[in-house]
Length: 432
Ligand code: DOR
Ligand code: ZN
Ligand code: ZN
Image (tube, rainbow, N blue to C red; front, side):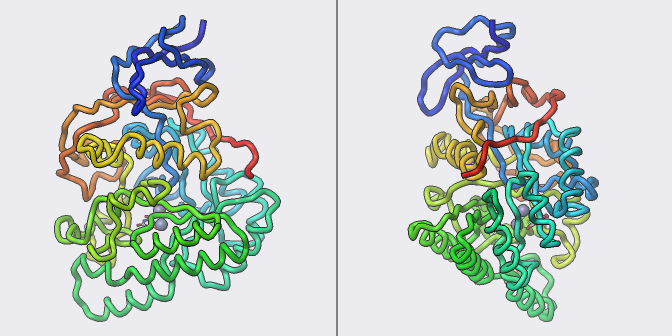
């Protein structure tokens, strides 16, 4: 007798109706006839996807927990159908020492209801080796904050580590963003639109080409976060075709919004890199050339967002809107379930070496999101579990939503109700 059976699952896009047997948090069988189990959940023919994996969240814990903490962030993840999150290092203190990394792990173990990994930051080059031993999801580099000399040193060291590491990259050039920001501030025109000029497309393009050069020179695996321009994506894909180890990520706001949203929702759409104009922006037609979607869930308070264009803090909470927005496109036949599985399940699992996640197969972790593809509603930030009750997607009509989220066989969300769970650090088998 096994622990749990999910019966009447509709595996998409395969269409097969089946039962999934679960024991000790793992998938042990996928069969037509439900196996005998202690607990039985009737999925009633609803579509079932592997639990989503978000390789890019900012949970603000420790130090900035008035914006978000690992509990509320992981609730937002569960609400949005995500069963694994990878937290970024720009907390207080930053996750760039062994001590800070271990402290954040403790916090996540105590508070998270979904599984997690942590990205590491870099400040003190001496800390790279001890932090690498703790198996970070990646080392994150914010190119808008570092000089080339520091980037060179960091690449030199990380590429020489005994266990291969990934460098994830926020690609905006420090000199160009500083220069353009100064220029725009001098013009004294304080409208939200101006922010896109202070951090122009060319700043990303220069940073992407520089980091491709560094990655190539040091033979270092790269993952480029929140790609926001066509030119950058071309550069990445060209490098990839030439044999370089490089992957790309897009965030929901760069996929679904354009610069007209500065006018529609002011600084609520302010984010780094900024939303682009039609000439530069990526859209749904580019999805096939992109490896994954990362939400870049970056919560702030409404007060912090409502300041003037220069003082307002950049970042958008995306965990609870990403999947419904994508399911709406599935309902419109613009994308398929297979795209969602590639971009949010299998893709991130492969890039970040989560060998037990991202697929519904025997032996994998029993992480699932169950969907209601008929449910229609209007996005309202007051309904969010994140502390950040704002969204540039407010008022968007969506059709399709997660109704149940299961982490290693444990239901953590059902129809908007949440249940306790001890999220686990995703351990991995050795990296290639
Ligand atoms: O808009 C952003 N917000 N971009 C970043 O790179 C950081 C993030 C944050 O932490 O708020
Ligand atoms: Zn970033
Ligand atoms: Zn980010």
